[in-house]
Every structure is written in structure tokens, then in C-alpha cells.
Image (tube, rainbow, N blue to C red; front, side):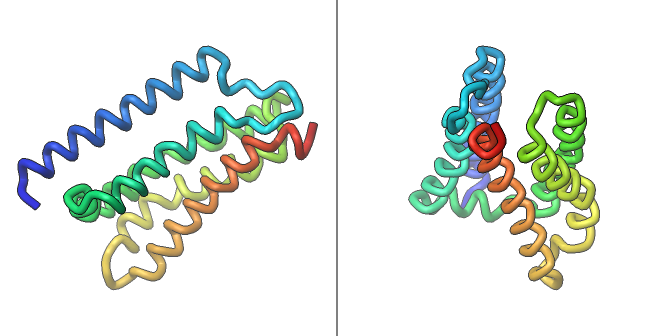
Length: 160
């Protein structure tokens, strides 16, 4: 893959991530994610799953994008997970009665665990010699995401 295509995909990906963030922030401010009734939070599920689905489809369909994604530095991508230490806010909001425990505790503690270990994982495991440990950590991070989104969309049904 040439450097020009790499820069193009880098800008496009950055733009899409920025647009998704602005969409999610705006939707939240407009109350689209509010889930007062005993129902499934489809808006939250859509906002969480759509970018993952878009990435997976793009990765599968476009060889140049796949090469771009595979060329990214795994250490930097792993370090980017450090922000998840902010999962403690879920736990604090649960303690104040703002979020249901069935969602806030697993999502909060899961995020804190991934965020707190991201630097060490990037430093120690993000190399070919430690591939299995690195993959395990990535799977734990994905499991936390799936758990958080699943519980976030169904918490009102599970614990009204």
C-alpha cells in the first residue's frame, strides 16, 4: 500500500470517527438514548454496533482499507484503550442512583480493568512473541464492550 493511500484512509477514518462521536454526543444531548420505559434501548445499541459493523464490512470488502488497518501500530491502538479507566464514572453514577447496578458495575469495572492494563499490555504484550496474551487481552476488551452494550440496552428489562 502506498503512502498516499495510507494518508487518505487515515484522514477518512479520522473523519468518520469524529462524525460518529459528534452524532453520539448530539443524540445524547437530544435525549435519544434516554430509556425510561421498560423497553430495549435500541438507539444505544445502534450507536454502539453501527461503527463496528461498518468497520467489519469495510475491512472485508476493501483490500486497501484492510491493508491500512493492518498497518496500524498495535501498541498505539492498545494505548488508545487507556481512556477506559474512566469507567469509574459508571460506578459513581450507580452509587448515586443514576445508573442501574446491573449495567453500571460490570461495565464500569470492566472498563476500568481494560483501561488500567492498557499501558502494560501495549508495552509488554503488543509484540509477536506475546501474541496469545495480547489476543486474550483484546478478547477481554471486546467481551467488556459486548457486555456493556448488551446490559445498557436491556437493563430496564432486567432490573426495572
